Length: 440
Image 1 (cartoon, rainbow, N blue to C red):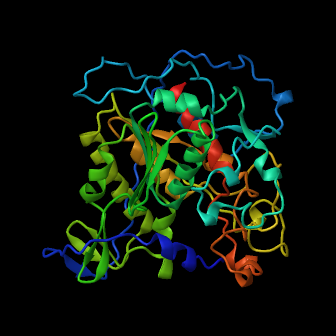
Image 2 (image 1 turned 30 degrees about the horizontal axis):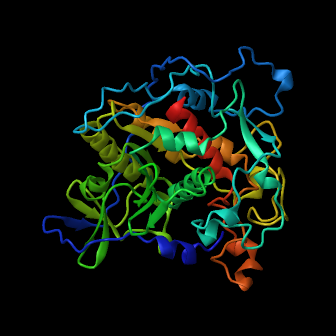
Image 3 (image 1 turned 120 degrees about the vertical axis):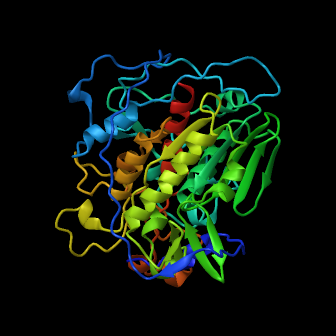
């Protein structure tokens, strides 16, 4: 397995020095939390300018992802955010986002295939200087470019092509904020590049900070921000130790209140151990633990987040998204049956999966996320990118990352990054889906 210590060292959680005087410490590991069964949602039925095929012809489909959790993904893909109506131009109130009335309740946005398309990508890495070195595969020597030439084709509809000018026009005077881990940063940088490519002469400003960074499109009054919070809930320093507080979120959440669109993600950091673990102790129910069932901890932390959203966010004026867990590709046997000697990473992969099924296991973390969100009073819209991303074994930085030395690049089994994604690349599709769900 790849040593990610050098990469994740850059993303260690910022902590403050507030001390806790009421917590006790225990080495006892609590029993696993019981997870409730998934509820079903009611579906929104807006009307659409988007051209969807009224009949799905399987003979024309090149690839449809058929896996054991079809119904879960379809239910998520058609559960669209409710239409938001403008209540007038009252400068003292947050104004809703103007969206088109749509009718894609029958479109399974997240079920489909990858189609080769020479018109992609919509921007070049060289024209978007905000891309972090670890995502900038072309700059750091990736020799192939076919991975840039794929677009996502849902099974029974067509996605609208991303239009950066339309995005800025619809979002004029508003703020979009991504909240989460480095996969959220991956998507944040992608959205900036996609939008900037439409208005390259527009005045812009970048404000870099930790945990909050903001890119401003000054001519439109649009802010696109990233707030780094890998667990969403708070982490504090107590007596020199990092404490993950499963039932506290107020310190992080202070920065979220100003956003008009919030897109959250979490997942990978909850399973990290050893040098990659982002905490020293977990606080739950007023007690400190050296460890606990990780899915149970995720469940408790997400419920804290869900309560905050339900109690503090007016969903008539603020849109809430949650991005599903992004898959990794460290096990070639998942896409090459019987593989024994082709390496232990995504290194050398240059095309998407061509099989009709994905043999990987649907992440247990995503089952927890889906359950918690379905229990919310106003459920967040799940941007369910897990399966379509799982098909893209070719889209990771692998060894073509600015974070790796020549010696590390020569040892892909140990150092290849098969967790994050190249830019341009797959996160552009995440944002095309985000754009579709937001405006259509």
